[in-house]
Image (cartoon, rainbow, N blue to C red; front, side, top):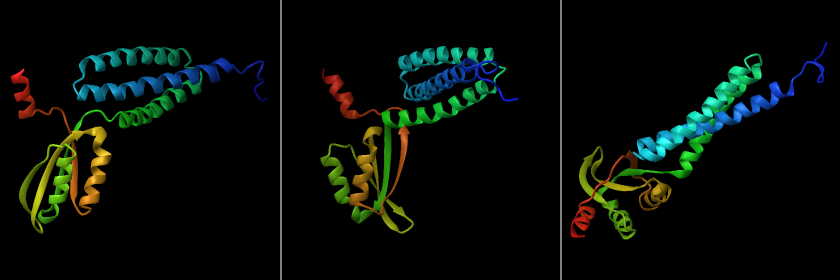
Length: 186
């Protein structure tokens, strides 16, 4: 005999509570992703605050899931919220694009002059090293930049030197002689 909505089906247990668990997990896992990002970037206060909020939300989600063990919907909501929260956290992290990166560009030696000149005219600190690659003399260009600037910088590299090889890595800290000298003069 099919379930009658009025007699045996609990809308609260099968729909409302699982939906709340799902939403809570999206929030706590998304916050966890951001907390990890800020921890890596050594933003201690923000990472700690996010950790506090994350655990509060997690406790609510877990307590509700444990109270409703009799409904498989709570299990699915808990796991689905985790998966969705992971995705949402990654999207948010990508949009925030916090931090500093080092772009390492390897280009044929004769083709790097215009690229380097353009980057310096844009105000970037550029270091160029002569090197020898598999196919002869190359220049290795080092360029620290904010991660938010990365799409524009990649576009510049592709415009000025479409055959360049470039790698990007995250940096934890950048110090410069210029900033040290300016602080000493104050």
